[in-house]
Amino acid sequence: MVVSRFGAVLASVLSLALPGQVAAQSAVAADPDLADRMHGHVAFLADDALEGREAGTRGFDLAAVYVASQFQSIGLRPAGGDGWRQPVRLIERSLVGSPVVSWTDDRGAPHAWTADEHILIGASVKPGVVALDAPLVFAGYGIEAPEYGVSSYEGIDARGKIVVIMRGGPAAVPSEVAAHLSSSAGQTAQAHGAIGVIQIGSRRDMETYPWAMLAGYLSGPQLSAADQDGRPVTRSPEVIVTGLLGHSAAAVLLSGAPTNLEDLLDAVHEGAALPSFALSGTLSVRSETAFKSTESANIVGLLPGTDPALADEPILVTAHLDHEGISGDESKEDRIYNGAMDNASGVAAMIESARILAGAPPRRPVMFVALTAEEKGLLGAAYMAANPLTPNADIAAVVNLDMPILTYDFQDLVAFGAEHSTLGDLVARAASAEGLTLTPDPTPEEMLFVRSDHYEFVKAGVPAVFLATGPGGPGAAASADFVANHYHQPSDDLSLPIDWNAAAKFARLNAAIIRSIGDAEQRPLWRENSFFGRLFAPDAAKAPALTAE
Image 1 (cartoon, rainbow, N blue to C red):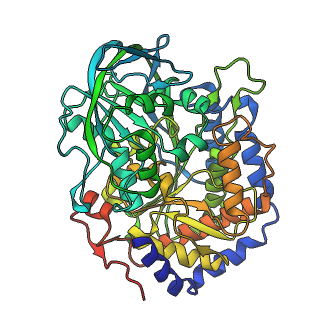
Image 2 (cartoon, one colour; image 1 turned 60 degrees about the vertical axis):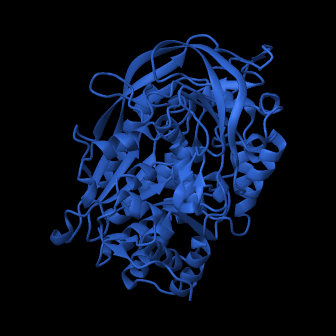
């Protein structure tokens, strides 16, 4: 597999260090105030006064002013098109009341499904009332990957129907490819004529994420980027019903199907192929969606490089500034989603990386961007990729910082996407200079490669990595604890046992990685065997595939 080859190749490069990197790190390693500055940034951004930094709210705007002021104090140049800001038009889509959903079996017996137990229906991409009665079809994982022998829609007719799919992907498809294909499930369903997509989570999904958390996310207000006419931008406008089906309801739905729910869940756990087949009965959905226009902004600062010959090859460093805002559940004692780890920590590391690099800029320019609306579907990144401040073809690379877990002294680093381009070599060398190893994705089933902002630039053809603290030592347990108990919860705040020295180390590491890219003789290249390089940058020059030694 690609990951194992990647791990073998890394072993041969970890002992290498660029002399310039070592000198740069020596100059900043003794900075006694870096940990305190990291603490200060996170404390401000995760304070209750910012009310969870939800995109389009006053709390986010205050956070944006803070980041812009930090960029200015560092000496960056405003590069958002409107000063520090790149305005982003948004539409908030909200359900009016609760959807009414029922499944009528082939005997004509209705089974009412409620949001508190059975099914979650999201706001539609079309305003007003949705009222439909549609047949159902089961389409496996909902992906089309004929090059890997997977075709979920083979042998079934999805036209005018609601497609039911399992979350996940078969082991025959590399995890990051499966993640991309899963994230495009709506487009794939639309291409086959479907009008709705209902997902069923894996056992791991339903054990990891409480139903109440999923309900708050899927049934709550949804943001979409807006086009010039004020309509939501979506890749599947004909898919007007989306949702998540709980296991109790799914078991009933599949009770008379060729394969029952438990067998399907076993197959997902094993990464096995899934069948596709027609489902009995009709799904009835009655919902209403209201639209409201709003605006947010990406905050952009530029650090010019030192080599005029490379002035048109900027590096993009991104970290999302938004979080989940305030819970609508008034029974909660603490309703503010402060987002200390997610992603005040990443923004703080970006600010301090910029400060370090401003003292001795690399050859290539660096554009630092605090992105909006990541939690709403990578919207700020998608807007910037579609409305680039510098041509996407000129961007040398994207380095994305999102939710580093800083509650322990990390010993290794995960760089999602590193094996797809020569960025992997540069990241490995910079990590080695900090005394760290580079570890392949420890949780490929989470499909993290498509769940953060860098992915929108990957789709624009730009090599990218998404950096996170690794599972070595106490890392796996610390990450598991955070995801289980604090991820997208009000408890993601300053009460967490944050290791501020580890936070300082993460900022130094990021600066070293950015410098490594910025000073490299050649800009990063996609690997010739990268699925993403072939798909999104077919005409770009490619580097040889990684091979085990």
